[in-house]
Length: 194
Image 1 (cartoon, one colour):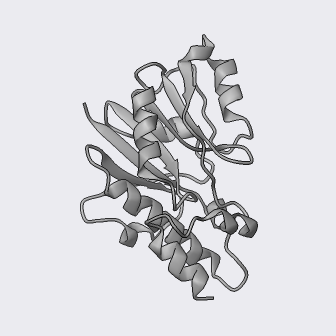
Image 2 (cartoon, rainbow, N blue to C red):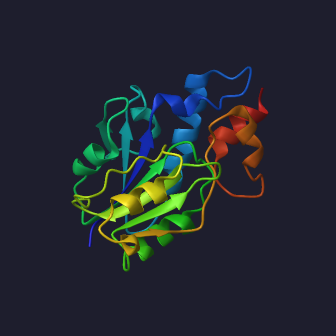
């Protein structure tokens, strides 16, 4: 079985840049950290799906970089991924534990879509078999994406959840980063250097 994990990058993911930090550099740092976590996973192929140009330098050689439109529906992005299963992770979760990515795929044994909810609404990540279910119109920035998807689904058991995590959407969210967790080196260096 082939599995892709795509790191999703949109411009608004720079909104958490703290005062004194260039938003473009901040976005590059969080995207790089999220990508590095994904690239270190076993049995998956990392992909970068981005509406922000110039991020090719943060990925390892040979990694596919998919250019998407700003605001492109997630279903359109999923249709461009070539694998049996795919997970999409928002780039503004640079300290996401790899274990949660594994849980996304494991839950696909009992559901068609798995969501990792985000604190304060939205989702950090989702996974599904490809092609994505026809009934689903996922939006990881929707406030209650799980409720929305369950309302779209032919039955509520088609959508599973994993333990949640956080996304960096405002400068206040930086306090959620756990200094005890490994990873997120680029983000850590950027916010401690200011």
